[in-house]
Length: 160
Image (cartoon, rainbow, N blue to C red; front, top):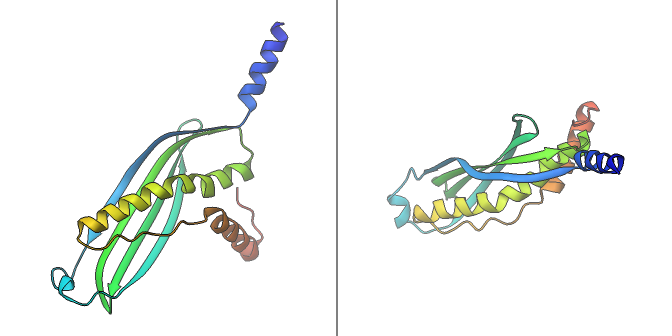
């Protein structure tokens, strides 16, 4: 009976584990260099979005993932505003093989963080007296697959 309990305990320890520990804003910035003049112009915006993720191993099986959304909105040739949010999370991730860990950190975790980053960005922009951005959802799985393909084509390397 004790052997069965030990076997069950060791199988449970070896099973993949994923747990969200904390979500937080790491950095937030907003700049409207042409205000208040920009508010008196006809509003015909063009939106540029830059999206980036990075991850860092913390102690033991904890990982920090940071999703950065940087938006530059121009009205004609003038910059109306620049807004950036770094939405971060701490995740407990255990017992994954290298490929699964890479996918989890590169796609699954950013999928969790994106709605929080989008809301923080919209709130920031509306507080600056501009219309909310209402960013469309992002398919991080597809972006991750594209990045893997790009890296394999460039050097035949695999992501670990």
